[in-house]
Amino acid sequence: MSDTTELYQSLILDHSRSPRNHGAPAVVDRVADGRNPMCGDQLRVWVALDGDDRVSEVRFAGKGCAISQASASLMTVAVKGKTRDEAEAMFARFHDLVTGKPVGDGAKDALGKLVVFGGVSRFPARVKCASLGWHAMRAALNAKPAAAAPAVSTE
Ligand code: ZN
Image 1 (cartoon, helix red, strand yellow):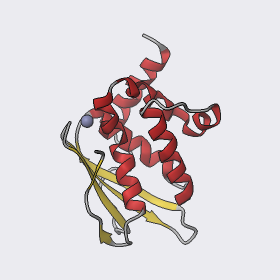
Image 2 (tube, rainbow, N blue to C red):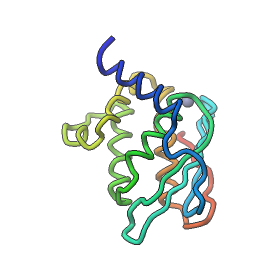
Image 3 (tube, rainbow, N blue to C red):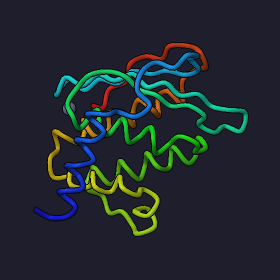
């Protein structure tokens, strides 16, 4: 087993057992749902932006496989405190990573430990699990404040 595989497995286990930023926020700003019917994953992501267009709060809840839960948990940690543009850029890098597109060293540095999800690109059915929380986060960013957004799909 390679170090990357071990790190991947321990991260997935850690975050699926103890998800970070989990559960509805006290005050809802923006919200979006994500569904991955192929696997049965369902996620809701809440995002709050402060006056500088910075992600002041990001939370998720839902059910699904360990990869979808762990990836959503890691997503919340990754985008919290980032500006909207930075969060969008991170989504784009993460999406390139899990879909097997070339990712440069600078992008890898920016992704940090999220690079362990690169192995997902070899399993097309799992790409949707790993990216579901990110799709929902982006939909929430683009949702109207304090208004429910239509469900998004990773299709
Ligand atoms: Zn899944």
